Amino acid sequence: MTIGAVAAALLVGTATASDGLAPLHDIVGPWAMRSTVPLVLGIAAAVVAAGLLLAWWFLRMRQQPPPLSPREVAQQALDALRTTEVSAYEASVKVSDILRRFIHDEYGLDAINKTSMEFLNSLQTSEVFTAQERYALADFLDAADMIKFARAQATTKETDALFATAEQIISTTKKEEATDANDGTI
Image (cartoon, rainbow, N blue to C red; front, side, top):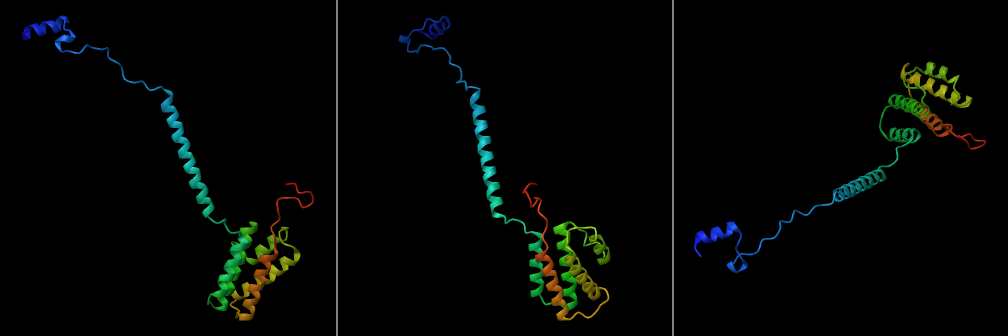
């Protein structure tokens, strides 16, 4: 067979297997993925990502200690102040600031921005403190103001008395719970 005859045979389609050519088969299209497979894979990836995010969040939350209550913060501040070397004047001022911050944080009363007299006057209509606690607080603020503003000599004895009164107020005053003590309802 000549080259021209082979070409003519191919054009006509008369080539046979004996000519050394393999028979032609129909073209098969690409394998079609079902439309649910990407959806399932996407959902599975989202679930895994959400699970990892939740696990990270729980581990992070477990590692963080719970925030300290205002009572604990005030007690720690008083303990730290006791161990530092400061003058009696400076200690008296800081004890007053610690107690005022405690009252503000624990009860939401504006003990920080008001003068002692304004603060004590606002307590007359408040039921946060008992009468005995108000008297102790008034004595404490008077003594602290005498040292802070009148520059009265602060002795170690007076400073210790301020520490004791502040610790007593911090430890004995209790924030009222949201439940009624009689029947346990909110």
